[in-house]
Structure formats: C-alpha cells, structure tokens
Length: 472
Ligand SMILES: Cc1cc2nc3c(=O)[nH]c(=O)nc-3n(C[C@H](O)[C@H](O)[C@H](O)COP(=O)(O)OP(=O)(O)OC[C@H]3O[C@@H](n4cnc5c(N)ncnc54)[C@H](O)[C@@H]3O)c2cc1C
Image 1 (cartoon, rainbow, N blue to C red):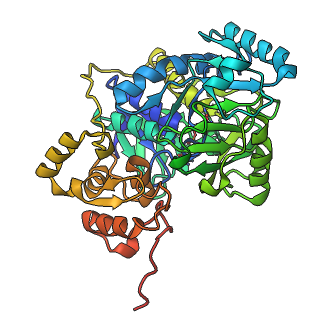
Image 2: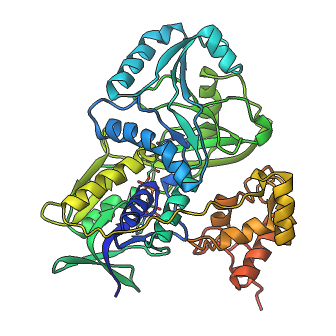
Image 3: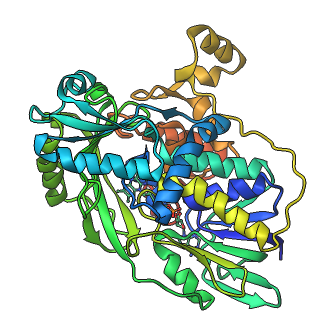
C-alpha cells in the first residue's frame, strides 16, 4: 500500500487547488476522486465568475477567502496557462435600488475590494447597450473576472501531477480507518495510507466526515439552471450583469463565457444533492427574471441547458479539523467557492505545515498549456501541420477543433478517457451542433488512441456508454 503525506478526497476546485499547492511545496500528496475525471461536481457547472468580494458579509470566511482568491486568480491563471477575462462585473438597478447599491459598495469597501464605483445611466448604457431600458445605475467591480471553471480545475490538477502529486480517478472513498498515526482510505478494492486527510468532497462532505467521527452539519442543496446561447450572440453583454442580490442569492445574471458564448441563469431551486435536471419551470424563471437586467436575449440561439448544485450549510463556509487529529474538512463550499478555492488551499496548507506536515525542497515544474489551433496565427498553424498533419484535420466544425488537439488532450497529464473529459479540455461537442457532427469522429479517434472498442467509449465514465453494444 502506497503511503502519502496527505490524501485529499475530492477533485473539485477546492481539492485541485490544494493538490497543486501541496505538490508545488514538495509534499507527497494523493488526490482521490470518485468520478472518471476531475471537476465533475459543482465545479463543472457554475457561472464561472471570479467574484470581486462585495457580496459576502464582512468578517465571514466567505469574505476573507473571496477577497484573497480574487487576488490570486490573475497570476494563478497566468502560471497555469489558462485564460481569464478581467472584464469587471456590474450589479444593475433602477433608481429605487440606489440605496441598496450604495450599501453593497460600502460592504465591498469594508471587505477590502478595490476600485468599486457607482456608474450612472449614460456611461452604463454605453458600456452595456443591451441593458434593460429602466436600468439607471450600477455598481462596477473592476476586479471581477470570467474564467472557465473546469479548465482551471483541470489545469490545477495537471500542475499537481507534473509536480509529483498522484491523482487517482474512479476512486470513491467509502472507508477511512485510523491506524496508529495514519489513515487508511479504501474504495473497496484499493487502499492508500496518509498522515493527513483533507475532505473536499463537496455534496458528500458529511458522509466523509461521518467515516471518521467528525461532526456533520445541517446542509441543503440548491440547483442552479442555465441557458447557454450560441457564440453568434457574443457581445450581447460584455461582462457579468447581476441584478441586486437578495436573501436567495445573487440572482439571475447574463454573462459572457470565457469562450464567447452567453450564459443566462442560474435559478436557485431546492433539490436533491445530484439533481442536475433542467425543467420548463426553471427556464420560465430565467426568462422572466433576466428582464430585470437586460433586453430580450435571442432564445432561438439557445444551444444547451444545464444545471449545477450548490451545497449550503448555514451562512458561511465550514473549514475546520477534527480535534486532536490530522483530519480536516471543508463543508458548505457554495458560492463564492470557485473564487475562494485558491485562498482556501493557501490557508489549509499553512495549517498543515503548522500541524507538522512534511514539506521537502522542490523545484517547480510549470504545466504545459495545450496547443489550441484557434490561438495560432496562420503561419504558426501551417508550421504545426507540416510537423504533424493531424493538426490540419478538423474534427469539430463548430469549435474548429482538430484531431491533433483531441490526441493532445488524450495524452495530457491526467489521461482523460471520456468524451466529457476531452470536451472540457479542448471543446469538441461544445458548439452549435452539440456533438451532432463530431461525436462519431471523436469516438473513433478515442477508440483508436485508447485501444478500446468504440462501444466502450463513455460520456463520463461508468455506465455512460454512447453506442449500443452488438447483441452477438
Ligand atoms: C449554479 C452555481 C453557480 C455558481 N457560480 C459561482 C461563481 O460564479 N463563482 C464562484 O466563485 N462560485 C460559484 N459557485 C460555487 C462553486 O461552484 C462551488 O463553491 C465550488 O465549485 C465547490 O467546489 P468543491 O471542490 O468544494 O466541490 P465539487 O466541485 O462538488 O467537488 C467535490 C468533488 O468530490 C468528489 N467526491 C465526492 N464524494 C467522494 C468520495 N466519496 N470519494 C472521492 N471523491 C468524492 C466529487 O465527485 C467532486 O468531484 C456556483 C455554484 C453553483 C452550483
């Protein structure tokens, strides 16, 4: 049985941030993820916004880690070689919302957010021509940004791996045993041993805590549904546009995605932990509420409906350890958890060092960003095709993704084996046709490269085969 300094349970943005943080410090770390790929929980389906930090109540963990996280993101994305669009964010209102906006401004200043200002009607409508006519003012937060949440998570996990960390996918921790000074974590067929265990299991955090007798918390689950519009709608809004927040959350927003789509949502519907369905009621809520902020979007251009689930525990994050142990837990990491994750990782790492975690001298190995042909000049692309003709063979027409890029994704440090894994790295099937044209080609390439029959290629792992097996 392999022995590690630290075992992280869960490879969402919190687990992956910590994994990278520890591996870069030379810690012998393993990250255990139940799914076939990282970023398969809340991290894959959210608004993708690095929040500036005007929203959380001052003094809370949410406020502290939101602010620090938003400071870390720009340099972290540069280090990882992934995109970030520092477009700022707007909370919009009509004149009757001025007092509430000013309160938000003061809360932001108290939290330490820089550059916040109230923008008046003329300037505002010049910045965002598609705002609803009755919008008069906005709070502009220039430090707000847009990222691709799953790409950041994947890049952090890859960075952890290239710096010596071990990521075990399809490893669902279902048993933790304390033996002398260490923990044995098992999935029924395999075990690993670690001095420290960090629970980053998102909606399953209580189940993991219960395995070691750590406290469990009152939690509830809230579904957020979205409509995604085709890239032809790029420019409908230039930055995330929020309505005034309410007790139910930040409200239904319109936002550009990092890759040039427009996203509308999310709803906030109480749900079961893994309910990511989208229904007519949710769509109707989005269509009704979005009118508060922007003009009517072109709903004929909707290409995808999807949902993510937030786990909520009281009003704040819970980040703590079981007394007299080396077991740490993160519970209720709802919004702004994506923003806060790198700061939570930094904090946990400091706690672990103070608690005796072994750190060794380590020379940082940078992650190699993917070659994406869309980012190359014609000359660069020609040269690449000369070296490797597969970069000249288009697989996904909507997103212009080549066979070379698919193969590159398959050979990337986490060795994804699912269609969703390739999709989240390189974007085939993410475009207007949603895989109608490219999925068969993708399956063929994956089957050839992974040396498995086409019928065994899955969408997202276990029991999600795409093709029917021949009955013979
Ligand atoms: C609709 C919506 C919109 C949001 N928008 C934003 C936003 O714009 N900005 C922002 O900052 N935040 C946002 N958030 C919050 C953010 O998405 C979450 O806070 C964040 O993704 C939580 O990350 P996590 O790593 O804690 O959990 P997860 O991403 O859920 O990761 C937990 C992982 O643990 C794994 N796991 C579970 N049980 C086990 C087990 N037994 N063994 C092994 N692995 C296990 C899961 O498979 C999963 O991969 C939003 C959330 C939602 C739902």
